[in-house]
Amino acid sequence: MTHSNIKSNLLTPTNEDTLGPYYPISLCDNDSMDLTKIRSGIINEPKGEKIIINGCVKDINGELANGCLLEFWQTNSDGIYRTPDNETHPDLDPWFIGYARNRTPDGNFTLTTIKPGINEELNAKRAPNITLTIFSDGIMRVVTQLFFEDESSNENDPLLRSVPEELRSRLMIKNDGQNEEGIKTYKIEIIMAGEKETPFFDDFAS
Amino acid sequence: MTQYGRTIEIGPTDNTSNERTPRHPLHLIPDSARASFAPYAPYNYGINPGEADMTRLAAGRPRADGDPIKVTGTITDQFGRPIRNSLVEIWNANKHGRYTHIEDQSGLPLDPNFLGIGRTISDENGNYEFWSIRPGEYLARPDIGRWRPKHIHMSIRGGSSRLITQMYFNGDPHNDADPMRILMGDNFDKNIGKEYDTPGKEFDCGYQFDIVIGGKNPTFFENDIA
Ligand SMILES: [Fe+3]
Image (cartoon, rainbow over all chains, first blue to last red):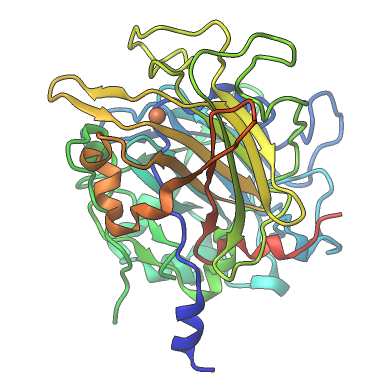
């Protein structure tokens, strides 16, 4: 069977559509923006360095993009994603999920998590990163991946290398000191459109 | 060397689309980074009985105003393989076109018996069903008189979290001018619920809305989660 035969048998996907302005806030009740707590009231914590990322999503005019639904996805501190393929991996952290979801009323968000790691065996070249999917009124889903500035592993990351050099800094989560408890804080600005637009990726065509 | 994929189009007459649509073509993802783009949402659903019946606030409560409808369908990937145990989140306006959402300031009538938010989970064969009230259209752009046609919002989540879509209704006079419908072109058919009769049933009619999740992201659904 040729490749084109396979293609012609594929079903046509349902069109994605915009989120609209009224995604029910309560549907996020069971989702958390604190990935260091697998459930509320549990003392166990994931391995790794706890960090806080303060960010925002802005539109073409530099205004905060209200009402976006944000999804974050990352590895644990050993670079392992919590996927079915990795269920029995010895470095899968039972106290870390790596998936966070939030509807931001005003365009700002705060993600408390642990710094994602690198796994030499599974994918030595990937630098620590966080995948961010944005659903919003007016657009279909867009997806990007955020990295940490000052990580030497960024140099070899295949995704970063595939982005023109002058755009790479737009994918960098920047150091922003620490909070009163001594937890390292970071900041990131996502620009959805315009001159300083954040690079987004095509997960349909690639 | 091509580095770029699609360019996302701006929905005509949609201000938010203009403000938020990336202008730069999307960047292609190198193979070695591809797998990291498919999140695997945890199973924390905890659905309560009755959440799939949006026509009442709870069993035994009065039915909301408007036409009760049933929506059924199968969720598959592009190979036709069923997507099981997938969380389907549903939200729609009441018969007057008003959402219960705190940010809906339209002033249209609320219905004391309608929440407009539901959830269900696809079964072993990828089938799902829910009941709702046929939503009303609403004026999205009062300044230019553009309406949103009747539609039901749906989010398909589980395994991977890859689809937010809307089911539209055949023949709605506002369909043709809808910005996202215009962008969908001929493929808009995929987003119309196919009406079927439900003789003798307590709902007005049924709509078959089969959902195909495209792209490479649904692969995790192939694993059976015990
Ligand atoms: Fe809507």
